[in-house]
Image 1: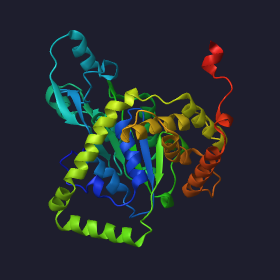
Image 2: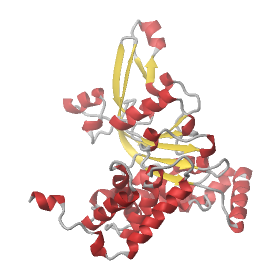
Image 3: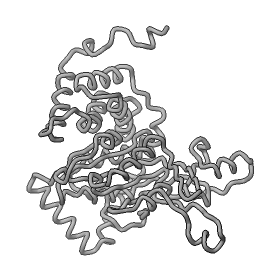
Image 4: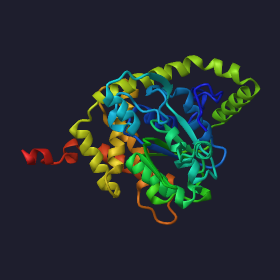
Length: 364
């Protein structure tokens, strides 16, 4: 099910507290290299509400009219075979404007519904087997939202891992083969009490956020007030937040325009690498995600230079879910470990964090 911009959901700007989560979600709209957020928290902490509220802010994108995958006319390299042929032919192509897709993967959804299947109607009426696109086709160039992501069956997890790795969905069924682009952002929510994610899927989420209920009395009161006002008259409540939503939407559009021009300095790269070394994370995905998120935070702030504050804020999103854990570790402890490492780095002289000779300099 796709949720459009006219969905009368709770306004993103009206959500009390949860600033870290809101920033993480906004970063996925700003930086095209960020591929997902996993949101961990107990029941009733607003995980789904915040994620679904993002639909109001989804930027508009150009797409080739009639393409079931919404291919980008300015990016032939990521287009489907049909659109590549159209683009190469030189003929006029009709382009439409559409909201960035937000597609919900329901609990218990079948593999055929996710990947696509054979259109039985055309098979019966025309005697031809045709591919009918699924949720991965709908979500191309957009968001695939998965509630209770930790409860997905293993075969669905394996399927999503393949698509996340290659950006392509390949279906071979009953003599029909179809491959189409499926470049998507994964947003998943989960209650850790109901089980954790498989490590392979956890690592595919660039960012993670641990959410909890408001711990201040005034915030709890405000949450209660806004929810009751929204339920009493959703249209009236949403109208009160129109200006704030418009300003936030405009800031996303501006940040998306800026992001390609923001280049992190060598000092930022050095600190990101040092964080990974000191935290003992496997691979390079953590520092890559941290630097990308830092660039996104700078863009959202209207800055063209990535500062330490951006990197350290991004590190709190990119590292906790990637730390090696003993069976009784939890996310709050992991986040504390990241923060302690950041504080130690802040207290050191800048010269202690710099490598004597960079690899690029050695090559020269």
